[in-house]
Length: 94
Image (cartoon, one colour):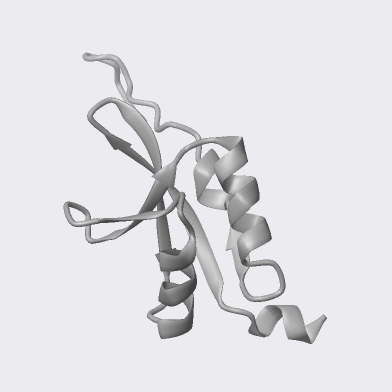
């Protein structure tokens, strides 16, 4: 199991652009990972956000897992962050 912890990690994060849901792919700088991301036809580089992005869909996430199987760990924990609650105006917060 120590081998799995040595694999690079790709973090998938929510990104909303013009009302559409996308996934921002974050990883430590690695020419190998960047090359693999460029090979994937469903992943694009965003000049606006200066990162790799893909559509937010279960199919795209599954393809990402398959594309990096055995090469890197795909971490989806940030896709499921609960929305922050904002108290109503005038509410006293203790």
